[in-house]
Image 1 (cartoon, rainbow, N blue to C red):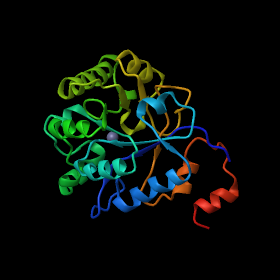
Image 2 (cartoon, rainbow, N blue to C red):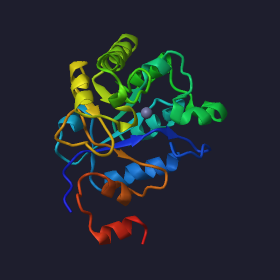
Image 3 (tube, rainbow, N blue to C red):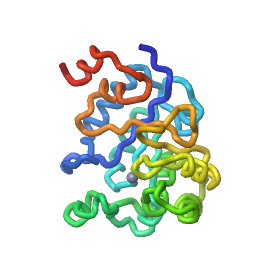
Length: 244
Ligand SMILES: [Zn+2]
C-alpha cells in the first residue's frame, strides 16, 4: 500500500471531560498524531498540502472552540502545523456556536461550544497557527443565493484579515458542503484554496481539498482507510480497522 497524498485531519473540540461527538480527548489526539508520524507522514503547512502530492500531514480545527488551545500545544510539541477555521460572526463576541444543528447543545453545554473571539484568535496566530475562514455565519453554502454566498465568503475573509492583520488564504466549508458554484465563488472571493469533507472532494481540486474527520473512536488505521487514498480497501484491512 503506497500512500502519496497529503493527509489533512479535521477536528472540532478537544476536552478531557466533554463527552460529545465533536470532542476528542487530548491523549487520543496526541496518540493519533504520533501514530501518523510513525507512519512517516511529514508535518506540513496548509499551503504545502494544498499544492502537495506527497505524504504530508496537516491538522485543522473547525469552528474555533476555546478548548483548542490545548490542541495547539500538542501539535506544536510534535512540530505539526495547524490551521483553525473561524466563523467571523462568532469571533465578534466569542459566543457559543448556536447553529440550528447545535442549538439544543448550546443551551446546556454552552461553555464547551464557546468560540474564540478576535483577541484569542490573534493569540493563536502569534503562536504560528494559520487562521482561515469558516464563513461569516457557518452557513449551508450550497443553499444560498449568489449574493448571500459572496457575502459569506468575502466578508469573512476581510474580517479575518482586518482583525489579524495578515492574509486569510484558506477556507473550510461549513459541514463540508460545497458544489461547483460554491467552489467558483470561493476562488472569486480571493482564497488560495478551500477544504472540504466527504463526497466531491479531490486532491486535484484546490477548492475541494479532502479532509478526514476523526471522531473519538476512530483508530489511526481506520483514519487512514477513511481517506480517499484507497478506492477499494481490502477486506483484510477493513477487518483490521474494525479491530478484528
Ligand atoms: Zn464547522
